[in-house]
Amino acid sequence: MGAVTRVFVSADMASVALGADEAADALARAGAEVTRTGSRGLFAVEPLVEVETEAGRIGYGPVTATDAARVLAGDHPKRLGPVEALPFFARQRRLTFARCGVTDPLSLADYAAHGGWLGLEVARALGPSEVVDRIEASGLRGRGGAAFPAGRKWRATLDTPSGEKFIVCNADEGDSGTFADRMLMEGDPFLLIEGMAIAGHAVGAAYGYVYIRSEYPLAINTLRRAIALSADLIAPFAIEVRVGAGAYVCGEETSLLDSIEGKRGQVRAKPPLPAHAGLFGAPTVINNVLTLAAAPFILAQGPEAYAAMGYGRSRGTMPVQLAGNVKNGGLFETPFGITLGELVNDIGGGTQSGRPVRAVQVGGPLGAYFPPSKFDLPFDYEAFAAEDGLIGHGGVVVFDDTVDMGRMARFAMEFCANESCGKCTPCRIGSVRGVETIDRLIAGGRRPADPVEALAQMRNAAGGAHGRASELALLRDLCETMRDGSLCALGGFTPYPVLSALKYFPEDFGLTAEMAELA
Ligand SMILES: Cc1cc2nc3c(=O)[nH]c(=O)nc-3n(C[C@H](O)[C@H](O)[C@H](O)COP(=O)(O)O)c2cc1C
Ligand code: SF4
Image (cartoon, rainbow, N blue to C red; front, side, top):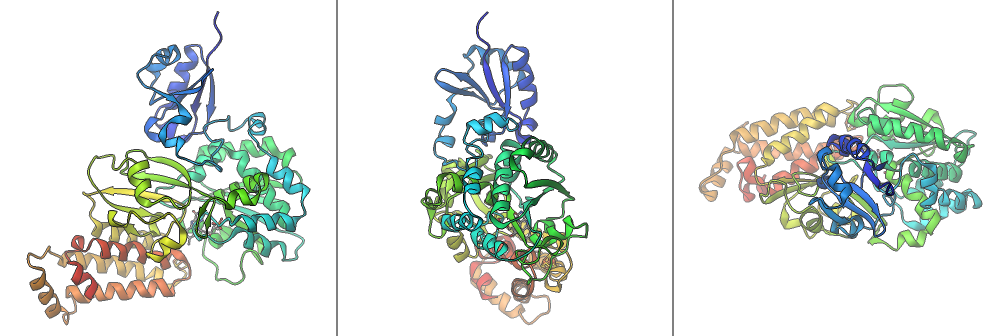
C-alpha cells in the first residue's frame, strides 16, 4: 500500500460556502489525510485543495467533490501549481496572515512550529513599558478605521493607575466588503490571543474581551475553542468572547463598551478616553483584531522589521480586502504604498462582469467613492485623507459601469439613518433629511442636452424652494453640518460617500460637473 497523501482544505466560512466541506469529505473518502486550515484568501479558486508533495504544496481549484480522485492522482486540469508561487500570493508580504491557510487553526503544535508564542515570550522577558516602547517604535496604527497610534493608546492605559484594567478586542467588523477579522479568527485564532496577552502584559490588564458580531458563528466557535486550548499558556491573562447583535454603531468603541456592559450600544462623549475610563469605568485598551494581531510580529521580529515596511506615516502591512464586482476577490496583505489601481486592476483583475470599472469605495460605508482617474493614489492614510477619503479597515469594493451613483449616495444617507444611535441631532435627523433631499435632487435631475442652457435654467430655478440648485445647496449644507456637528464618525463621515459621488459622478444626479460645483 502506498503512502497516504496529505491534503489541506480550508474550513473558512467563505470556502465552506463554496463547497469546501463536500470537497474535503470526498478527498477523505478517496483515501487522503485531510487537514482543515484557514483560507489563503483567493476566493476565485476556493475550494482550494493543497496536496503535500516533495516539491511543496501543489494547489488545485476550485475543486468539487467529483474532482477528488483526479486531484489525488495529480493529473487534474484544475492544477494551479505550487500555491505560494501563484502571482496573487507571491506578490504579498504576509505578516499577520502568514499562517492563515497554512496551519490547522486549532493545533497548538502547528502554531508553535510556525513561530507562535515567540512574541509573548519576548514581551514577558521585558518590562511593560519596554513592550509599549516597541509598539510605539513600530509605528503601528489602529486597523479598525481611525488609524490612531497603538503605542500611544497602550501608553495612556499603562500610565493610568488602577487596580483593574481591560483589553477589549473589536471584532465587530461592520464595514461593507471587509472580512479580514473573520478570516483571522477562523484561520489563526492563537495569533489574536497572543496579541491580546501581549497587550495585557504591557498595560497591566489581567482580563480581555473579544466582541464579535453574531453573524460570525464559525469565528465565535473557533475562537472560543482556541481560548480554552491556550488558557494555560496565556495565564494569568484570561479572555472571554462576547457576541454583538449586529448594530453597525456597536463597532464604535464606546458603544461597544456599553454593549459589553449590557446596555444599549450608544456612543459616549469623550473625554474620558477609554484608556482613562473605559469598560466598567476601568482603564481599557480597545483595539481592532488586526492591530492586536500585529503585536506578536513586532515583539518577535523587532519594531524595526515592522517599521521598515510601509509608506509615509503608514507603517507595516495592510490586509486589503477586495470585494464587490471584482474578478479576484479576496484578502491581499501588502505593505502600504501600493496604488489603488494596482489593487483593483493588477491584483483584483478588474471587474467580475468584464465591464469597465467605474467606481471604487474604499474604507466601508463611510468611505469615499473614487473613479479610475484616482487610481494612482497610494494606499496610505494621509494620501486618502487628502482626497477626502479613508482607508478604514482596508475594504475595497468595486463597481462596474452599470452602477447608479445617485442611488449609492442615497444609500449612504439611508444607511446612516438606519444605523444612527440617535444620540446627536445632525446624524439622527440630518441623515433622514439627507435621503429626502437626494430623492428630490434625483427626481428633478434630467441629463441636460446642452450644459450651458441647463446651467442657466438651474440658476433661474435657484430661487424656487424646490429648484435643483437649492436642493444641491441644501445637501452640501447638510453634509457640512453632519461632518462638523456629529459626535462620532457615523454621522461625521457619511458626507464622504455622498459628496464624492456628487463630485465624480454628477451626471448620475442629472447634473453637469459645473452645476455640481456651483451649488
Ligand atoms: C460607526 C463606527 C463603526 C465602527 N466599527 C468598527 C468595527 O466594526 N471594527 C473596528 O475595529 N473598529 C470600528 N470602529 C472604530 C472604533 O471606534 C475604534 O476606533 C477602534 O476599535 C479602535 O481600534 P484600533 O485603534 O485598533 O483601530 C467604528 C467606528 C465608528 C464610528
Ligand atoms: S453621529 Fe450618529 S451614531 Fe454617532 S453619536 Fe451621533 S447619532 Fe450616534
